[in-house]
Image (cartoon, rainbow, N blue to C red; front, side, top):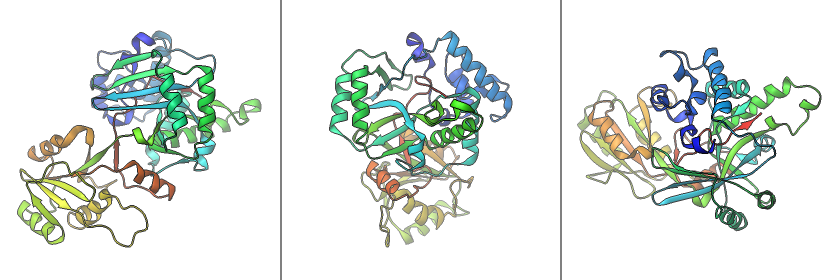
Length: 397
């Protein structure tokens, strides 16, 4: 697949709509979106969770495996996966990780998953007998791992290309001796954290139970391929989190002037503030053609970190605009930080939204502290950028 890697590699299945996936996959029969979002090869309006979609995904996967072709390894391997953009670079270790450790909270979570999204990826994995997109993991930095990764990445990569969004992707296969030393070093890493991919990991756990239940004899013993999930683990010091911003469709029956007056009674507002806040505790708001700064008062009576997104939700979105459950309220939408604040302004100026809020990004340290306390972060709190591509690495189960 080496020469076709740039064509095969695709954006994660869950960051694009069906229409966006259809446009990205058009004219490129090698795009992995034909596997991860196979509804794009069926008539418009096809239910993406229908049996026909999973059946087409399996057919497309078989075709890609045969014709790209995808390389099936004869022995277990570790890989390095580097993501590089202007001014940022991160290199992770691509491997399979223990679902038993996922169950026992050695692999820690910070997000609730939705059953319908789990159902989808579980069915996808079981139908294909493969996990086709990696979980984005992080761990607290270790100098021993860094040294081994740096040395291994000095060799020529297997794949090295720049995707259409400007992100450069590089992949190395680690030699057996270095791989053994990395495994040894990782044995000293006490905890891993899911940064992005909670639904992929949860679905891998459910696929394991389904496949294990149907196995017999030696196939039912521990250590089967389905007992592991595909992931790429990056040191926390290299991980970049962008804000996950909010837009709200209406002002709850208020005019912009009335909303400003109500908000000003609760919080300090600064007209003409920059669209991107430069410190924790600050937010920015775009309303009626103008940016405003908002100072969010610190939470009281809490033992752990309270995120700006929580303060905004409690003090503005719910208290004033009446947006309660952001998972289900159709009045709110979310804009990943990679799209920038111009996307927020455009949404309001076009009339698609009445007001937009720009946040300061969550720190990786907050994520790990919340996960260590078995806490749950609010929905759509973090946008990890750059993102791993689907299709470069696949774990057959």
